[in-house]
Length: 176
Image (cartoon, rainbow, N blue to C red; front, side):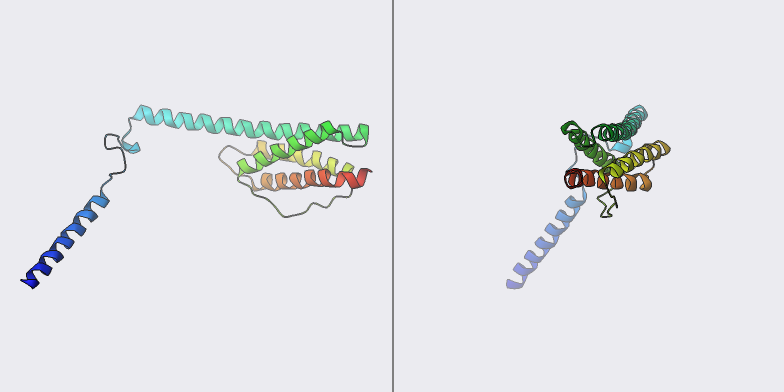
């Protein structure tokens, strides 16, 4: 009798384990009335693809526009420094906007922070380098497609960010 009881418990546990295993393999978490993405009608798939393509085009255009904005800001900063021989509070705001724009560009390109330090001697040289690098960045961005990632553009954006940091931190000691 004692043996039959353990035998019964063992069989019950074995059947329970099998039922749990079978249920775990079924898709109980998904919406049972919803078709998988592969079973969507052709026109829905095309609409989704067109939306993705339009989004990618817009993202690429935004990237180019940000690059052109960075070039414009760096040009304005260089001209202002040439006239005033210092950075005005308005120029500092432009410098902040330039830095934010460059970080967005670098992030969209898939880049990350770089520890390389740019060697600069003065704010004036830094602003000239800034202008040169931003124009190179715009050229590099225009060479790419929305499907490619440019390591050169990432390196240039990192170099520009270092120049911006130099201008922000080094301007007080160099101009006064």
